[in-house]
Length: 96
Image (cartoon, rainbow, N blue to C red; front, side):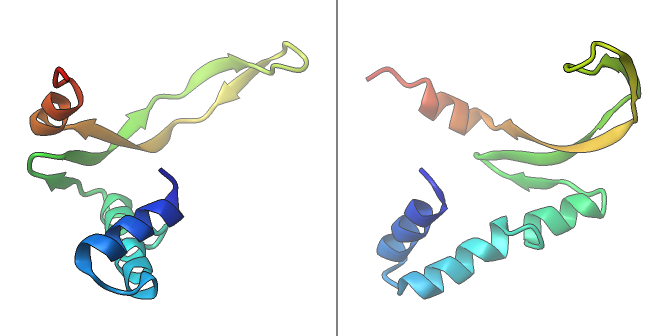
């Protein structure tokens, strides 16, 4: 499912226009949306039954340039991560 398909589903389920559904979707998932803003502040977004969005720290490490094979230093960074909740895992793994 891509973003436009998600907007279509939101519009149908909430019985709103696609434009309004796009606003709702952007509120949460845009680069300046609620989830990204909270992660940027170092917080965590926990959606009970669905999962958690959080920031994980990656340590600095040595790597290889794939073109040249030369060693390069990769700086430490913070990366967004999602960990699925039990209810979501159970739904995905449900036998059909």
